[in-house]
Image 1: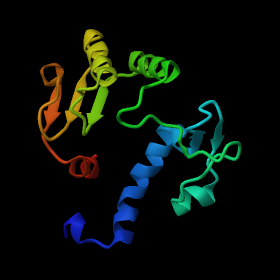
Image 2: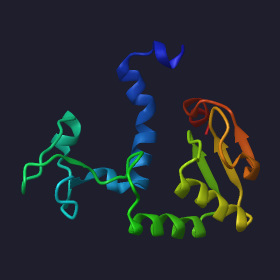
Image 3: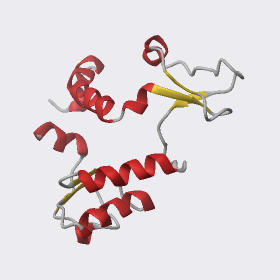
Image 4: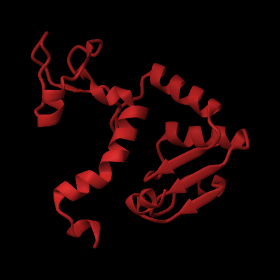
Length: 148
């Protein structure tokens, strides 16, 4: 049976281990930051996170968002330094579903390559660093993750 044919409950059950791992490796998903007062970071209450309501800042009424960097936003110096520290500590790089056209992502791959670390890329279509990859898979991420 294809994933698209499953009920939403079955899809959630299949994705739950990945969601738990994502939350474990990206704890900032559970924190929110006010868009008006960026220094106000707090843990998102589970009842808000589970209901998908957009919370408002208790200080100013502005829109709050998870304390992660979305596409098009600038990475903070702190998060960028953290990423490069982790890239130095890791045994290799795995990228999933990214063209790596955005500079921080491609710089991490270049850093790993300069340290002779293996680079694995899963992406449908070319990336800017395919030539550096130890292995490149042109597959759907969901198909690859099911096999890991």
